[in-house]
Every structure is written in C-alpha cells, then in structure tokens.
Image 1 (tube, rainbow, N blue to C red):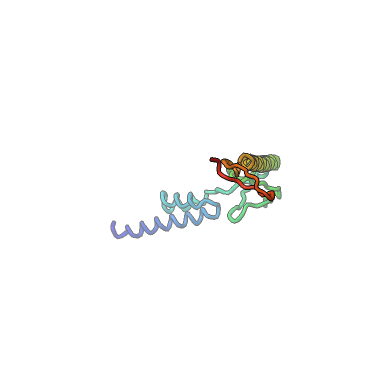
Image 2: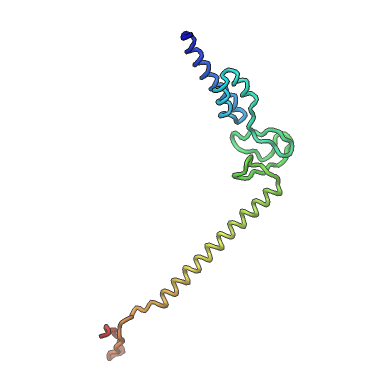
Amino acid sequence: MSDYTGLIVLSWLASIILAGIVGHEKEGVAGGALLGLFFGPLGVLAALGIDMRCECIHCCGRLNTNRRKPDICPHCQSKLYWLPGFAGGQTTEEKFMEYKKQELAKKQKAEEENARKESERLEKQKQRQANADPKKGLVRVELPGGRVEYKKQA
C-alpha cells in the first residue's frame, strides 16, 4: 500500500493541474482545479464540461473574453455593449445608452456641486476680507503734510 502512495499523490496533483489547464480555455481555471482536487482523474474529464464564458445576448453563442471583451459577436455579427461592474457585463443598446446618460448626469451633477462649493468658498473669503479691519483698535491721527498715522487706543 505504501508503495503506491507517492503515485497516488502525484496523480492527484497532476489531476488538479490538468483540470485547471482544461478549465482555462473556457475561463474556468478555479472550477477545473477544484474538480481535479475533489475527483482526481475524473475531475479532468468533468472540467471539459465547464464553460464560464459570457454568452451573446442575441444568439447565445459563447464569447472568448480572455484578452478583451469583443465589440462584435463572432457568431451573429451583432454589436455588443458592455457595462462595467455589471454581472456578465453585456447589455442591450438601449440599456447601454441609458447607463451612459446616467453616468453623464452624475458627472454634470458633481461638476455643478463642485462649482457651487467653490463659489461658496469664494463668497466666504470675500466676507472675511470685508469684515477684517486691519486697523482695529487703532486711532487715526492726521499729521501735517497729509500723512496719516495710526496709534494704539489708550
């Protein structure tokens, strides 16, 4: 029994690696590796059935998004629209345009808010300058020759 332990461990590790490689083609590396871990050599065969790739919303064809998300479906030649942070990321043109309008509205609202805050800041600065009397607590004394001098109030 102990003679085959090393062979069993080696085949199990090979199963994990091979199942991960098989799953990589269909964007299922983690799923393939887990199948290899739990089911050994049978997990490699099970990893062939894993397909985690996105589907085209028009023809349900699988899209390879390993390198980058395609703009056109390779199966039906339909234009594809992708939303960031959206499960699957793909959407229809109408929803994509609605998303872009919302993003533009958020950006404009943020710019308006920043402009409002800046104008409030400038207004407060003007008020502070107007209320600040640099000669506070001083008495103005006019000297001969048109000169003016300020002295502390006694």
